[in-house]
Length: 187
Image: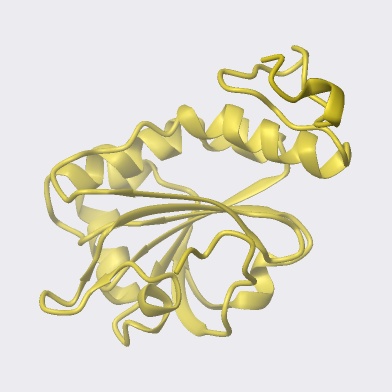
């Protein structure tokens, strides 16, 4: 079953950010746009390259009104240890959620049960807490965080302009489509 168009399920988890531990819940995903990036594990190989790349896009994402959350099945304590020991992860300033109970990973349907780790899943969530995009990559395939920018801009545009849709390769400011009977078979 697709999670597109569904509200984020309830959860509570501990997180690490900028030297502090705190609780995050599904309520954090309401009132603003959110990007949630699941990854298999701290102290691994592809994961730090992705999280570093996500940090490189963080200021741009924040300028779009987006908060970023990374999630693995490691604890928030492990996130802090990784942050303190890795040059790449030490630069991360967005929220790192620990999911040792696997609740969050199950809620987003990315848990690899047999391994107890999450798939590489990326979710864009609107201010109502509703999932708008889902992308799942195989473990050996890293993601490019820059691809999130246009997806978020398109999701925001569609939300703010009911009755319009963004075609493939849409860029901010370019033409959108207004689905109608007159448009059928004309594209």
